[in-house]
Image (tube, helix red, strand yellow):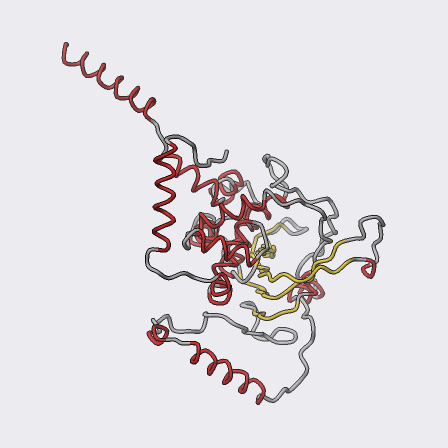
Length: 370
């Protein structure tokens, strides 16, 4: 069920919208869309992920229109997405071909081809930088020049490879992780089909990746903290760009050279290793690992890690915890549905409320007579 704004009292509504538009500009300043793109990348990435639309410029425009409100920006983006024609479906993306900008593992100190810290706030002090109050374009240009100069002076010990191997592949080669058959079934598209339960994994993953970041994080945290006590070790976090291609519209071919290259999108991918107890061939308990998977648009590592936790949880619906109940999880993490349902309480409920008041009055009259 979805809720949208209702009509009524046209003059009052028009005046309300006019006041809202005035409040956005009354300070005499405005943000350029290019400025939002350049300085609020994390916000843009989050809006794109939750709206299931990879369009940085449109996301930045939605953020400007929504005055920075995440839920409103996602609502606007989803509404825009619904107007777009779906002309093609891209070929399956192989993340092994990712052009990596950040790659770390919490499972191993040394991983094949090494760890790449990339751009992150993980290693910074969370202190207010008051120098940003007086930042000017001249300061920005100086910082950019100094950074580029520093990078050009660094010795290149080796040429970085264009792609990096997956950590889990080495563990599979040792026989520590299982190989799974390729599932070539068409994915379930929750934007085109109504989700039913039990839901296929493709539907669960799509719902999780477009779920509200805070909600996905909170439920992943709940599972980690004690509601199921799923405590994974992050095998690998990857941030980078993956290529998108489409097949020839009139010719069926499995040859990659016959596909059309559209461009790249940035994604965050996580594979978490979850310890589980299994029965061996002698019916004895043995420790094994399962993989939880998370992926989302842009750089949003917290959400992708939490998603990987919930992915593994939802594979075990027999566990007596809400984080393992796919109906509970999947129906309560959508930002548009959640904010819409809560916000509908602001709409008129005069008739039902008056009915309840009348019932209370009648009961109290009866009590006073007795």
